[in-house]
Length: 85
Image (spheres, rainbow, N blue to C red):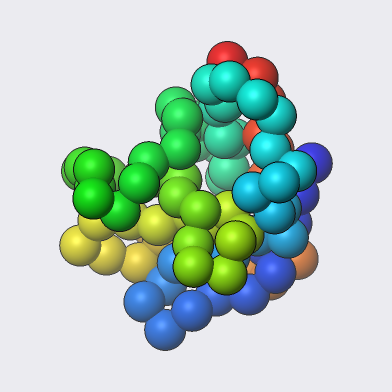
């Protein structure tokens, strides 16, 4: 279980989960009733919601061409989960 640590000016949700704390193998991110399959790299950026490891080394939830914060209605302190796939 993790929490939203802060929200950047793009509306990305930065969590308190470090990349080194992620389980090995494929993961599913559960956030605001949505499920995100796997962790995406910026260079593989796709459509919709995605989970990435940001330059700070923390797991982030982002939305291509939009604000994940606005789309999900989440704020600082809200919970999210990382589960093995």
